[in-house]
Image (cartoon, rainbow, N blue to C red; front, side):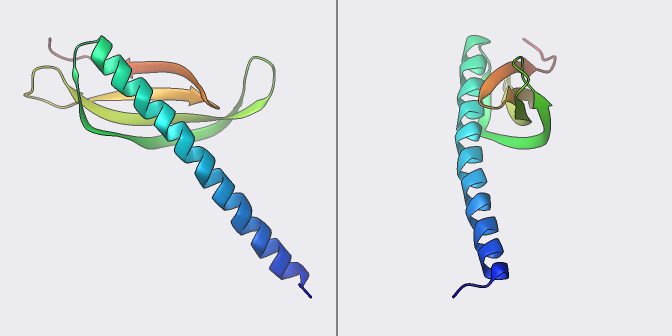
Amino acid sequence: MFHLSEVMWLSLIIVSAMYWWSAQGVKQIALQAARLHCKKMEVQMLDDCVVLHRFWFKRDESGTMRIWRSYLFEFASTGEARYHGRVILLGRRILTVQLEPHRI
């Protein structure tokens, strides 16, 4: 027989694993958005990765609570300097992709 504490620990592990799995999917969405935006802006995405910078809980247009995430990435325009970019998502929807000012 399981004790209540064992059930709670098992539930916590399962919920954590489900969140991690979902977060990996959202990270792939952010990575793809950064790649496409860099290609469109004719800059080179460096390191081919995005890094979670911040997250928070916000409501979408319909009032549903979603996780707001900000991912950072690096890019180069001339090959001399690295610049930062940011992808912002609400749930699995891309809100914006931003590049900091850079040389052309």
